[in-house]
Length: 216
Picture 1 (cartoon, rainbow, N blue to C red):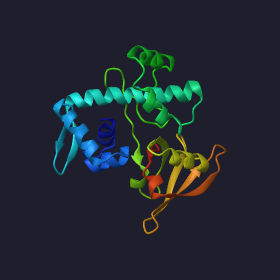
Picture 2: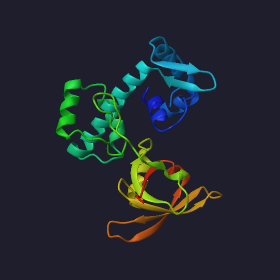
Picture 3: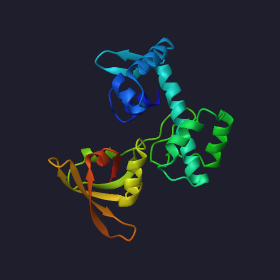
Picture 4: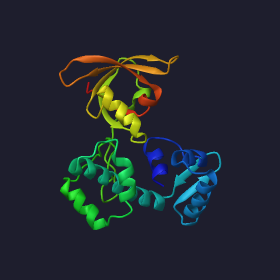
């Protein structure tokens, strides 16, 4: 259900069964069986040629699950010293074990954070979701400038790659060239010292970064 919600959160259509199976690394038959149960419970709708979407009830349940996951990720980084590439799997394991009381205390201890270590908005207790103004880097035109405000946590190895490049939340980037034939976007990265360096980002990396545009 979190996968379906995240797809809609990022502006995507309903998810196909094969996409869910590929992401979770399970068989399509396993996914289909679970989807039938969720459908019976009134949590999803599965429309041919459109995919799986959440019902209003499913939306409520999924938002609560996402809130739990992202708060735990934030706690692991802020209080236990985890790096951003380590927390996704840990949070997946822990989120099913903690109580709402524990979660509320984590939220209060962290000062009610609005975004997790990857820049993903953390749903509030009332189910509303903070704004996230970024645009996918791959959709930005050459010459555009902005600050990285969100990075996909789907692939820990990609997060480690960004660390090597010095690209993370708050990094200022300017799109220099889009080389469609090579599947590469060339960006200028502004370092902490104010110096700029040119970085070639492959398509997989560019599709994992959201850029908040500079104010005019």
